[in-house]
Length: 109
Length: 116
Image 1: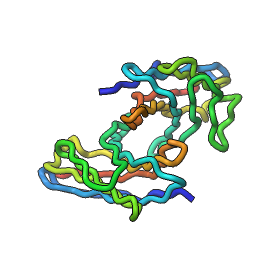
Image 2: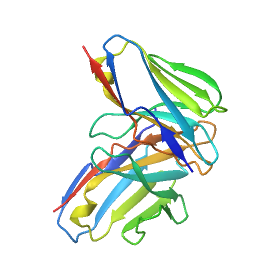
Image 3: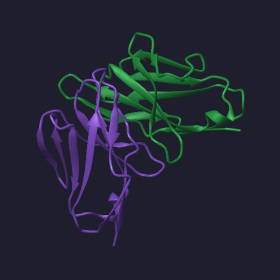
């Protein structure tokens, strides 16, 4: 079956670094997305990894290991506005995104 | 960056009426668009996959006669909720897939539907 596993909730301090881990199982694999979703809003695209390794984009970086079915999103220099849910979404062989419940990130001053 | 728009952003309607939601990819051609529904504090739920020029593929449990999807062009897909009832009240979000070497999926801002 298809499955996503992320922590339900994480708390971090403003200015710090946080890593959100994701393990997945899918029927086929066409890359993995990370999205940010604020309460009451649609998801916003953060990153897409299809090859193993680290992709860095400003304060956000995303890592993928296809052999381990593992990815993480690294957020640096945390800001209060980063408080949101972060969704790990691998894409299966039909180019459909597989969704879990996401990780709710709470940033404290 | 790529933008996907949805219209309307808010709909309030009476039970029994039909509601049409448009999803447009503004600066790229989307061969595939996806329609999702999200209830408060729940995960995104895929309703259907829409490919330009062909019939939509619906997920199990989604009534295709109730949720009519049309993907008339590479930049426009529409979802019509027919004979809406209060239990259809939800947040409807579309996403558009950009392939062709720049694989990604962008979401529209969503449409909030409230059926009275």
